[in-house]
Figure 1 (cartoon, helix red, strand yellow):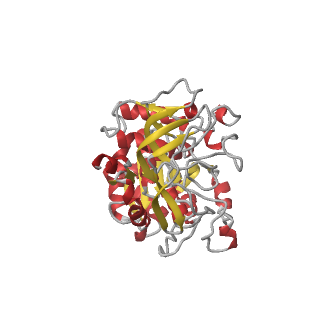
Figure 2 (tube, rainbow, N blue to C red; figure 1 turned 90 degrees about the vertical axis):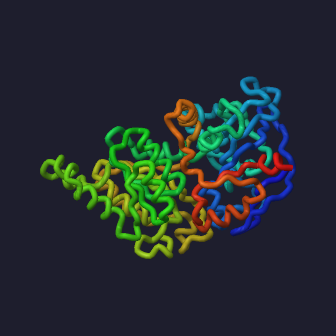
Figure 3 (spheres, rainbow, N blue to C red; figure 1 turned 135 degrees about the vertical axis):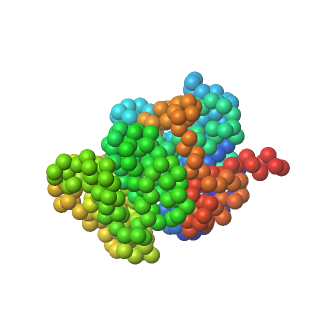
Length: 402
């Protein structure tokens, strides 16, 4: 089969690799109809992880079951499925408590596994024509309809970034009436904003500097904050205090709560230095969130931070060690949630919102490409070129044309 293979920093290629096969009675083989290129893939693409060349990329996958193992009873050939990026056994101590992102069985090296990602087990990714799904019944979410229908792109986003955006809102404790600040208007940040609105947030601020992304944030009803115009925390606080309705509802002393109650980091360890965006400053977003989130508020850190970063600016950063404003966090009594999303906790609920027409996360999709165009798409996505906010790979496009 053809697949997208990581060759080294800044380079992927489409190559012929061995077809997957049923290796265990609980396996399922899926013919991929759509796979996403994720911002997390760029960490590997850029050489900012410990990955070795040869990784078959892709943890955002969906398609149609082509073959099932002898022990699989609830799924059959022809079923349409989306695959949470967490590979989980479904029955270990962590899985049984809902933490499928920290499965104790699927990865010998650590808690948690995923398709096509460094340190997440030996599993190949789905930016390919076929994918082996281990523990198939635990890792397949059944879908209605047929490949290529009007819900295809919405359903693909259930594999990762829609549940991830929703999980960020959950960790930040977004509820009806909440005020929310989200740093990063990439796909996860935009879907964190969208999820915050689904949860009933009153105000959602989205911070970025790329016009295309800020425009998308505004289109879904968020308030766009361009960090090139000044410190984001200050901009948000000033906007709220300048609103006569917000100011008029405050009793004496409540101007101390002119920030927001919920903060989300959708950027991670490659955050920009707000004073000089040409440079990285891994903790800049955390520092701004601590400034803008009110006392007793909550932070959801969904942006990726890795224990090993070959591109870190110093020895500590290379080992994932950062200086954080713990004193302010403690003084304000802020709650902090972080880590990978247990996707399956949210997949069924969000799937049913899509089916009912209450959610349409595919608004973030900017381009659909055949498998052969993946190397070019990676280059342009990495450069944040217009039209490459969210790219979906359609392996069957070229096959259909042949």
